[in-house]
Image (cartoon, rainbow, N blue to C red; front, side, top):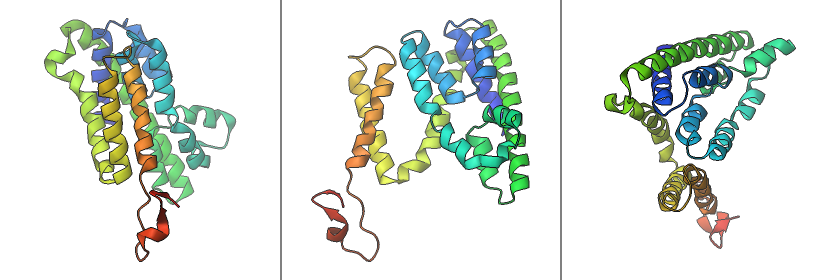
Amino acid sequence: MGAATGVIGLSFGAIAVASGLPAWAPLLMSVLVFAGGSQFLAVALMTGNPFAAVLGGMLINARHLPFGLALGGALGTSRFARFAGAHVVIDESTAFALAEPDPARRGRTFWAVGVAIFVTWNIGTVIGVLLGGAVGDPAAYGLDAAFPAGLLALLLPSLRDRATRAAALAGSLIAVVATPLLPAGLPVLAALLGVVAAVLLPTPAPAGEKADDVVQGGRPA
């Protein structure tokens, strides 16, 4: 997993410098921010709409709050350990830690995964910055497609859920319609309105119950 993360970090570094950012910016971002999704979003939106880049990053990383609450003592008991551990609360370290029923193993797993990915992500970023500055446009090598492809792979399993599928389709439509009308970056944020489509869906009837007992007037009871 660390090796795969390093490859994605490489694509981030290359794309960042090819987008016009100075070499120090992606390096500093990977150390201080360490959030792949929001870093890619920031690079994509920074030159067009910095406000959208900051707001989008905050929305993407809002999931880390419940992550931290769920992990609890896995981060450590001292204030320093919790402060340092908060920096490596990511999807992978959270998922692997919560899969461990034993509290002691949960803490070790959290730190092993978090630190490994932090190190390989930053090594990959450095290599990407060096390669990006040397070879020019990473799109010529397909590196620009690495992150969208990764996001699509993560998204596909969740599309089996009807509500998620409705939100994704509605959000995509909103983004496409808004692209010629709004400044760069804002259509992505406007796509969040697609969640409304999922909220408006009637709640499926539980097994053994009539739909009329669960859904009244097309709205959840």
